[in-house]
Image (cartoon, rainbow, N blue to C red):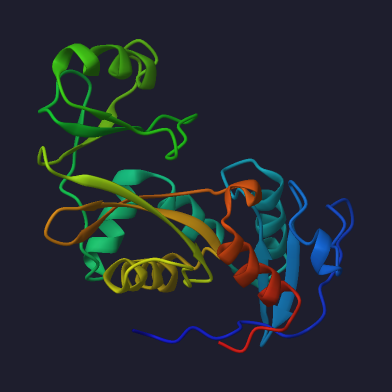
Length: 234
């Protein structure tokens, strides 16, 4: 299992118009706070949500327009949060992924369904086990048939397993899942993300989604606070 070390040690940098950066570890994970650090010529942005048109996304875009290299990049974010693009890129990097397809009508069941419209959020996924259940979900995620959607056929015995990754590190995940999360981080370079996987005989990537500070476990908060405080050694 790869060892992921503290990606930065320098002091946080405040930026005009952005959220204040808190150095006190007791307040590091305040809601909607964006953290910015620089190390080795890279600017790291840590946020609850990097979705298109969020404050974090625009901050990264601004830095890129200034010629700075950011972690994550806007390309990383746009590709990670569109499920078919995410899985295509991950598969090309050798990461095990779920089978998937795109439809605007019926799907095989059971399947995991994701919206892929302009407004879609990958954290809003649904596991449907019959067509009666699938129909209202499809109606919702397609905007009454305006947009296609992504489906992932899964076995009846499949288990959906979410896992939070903090700079690729996990708190309590089994080693195969921890390895999947680490590989997803190395590919997409999103400091704080939730890796949605499907487990049958192995773990396969289903999607990458944002994760709120308030949803982090004690162990996950500890990892993030140590990194932000510059106290993490590995």
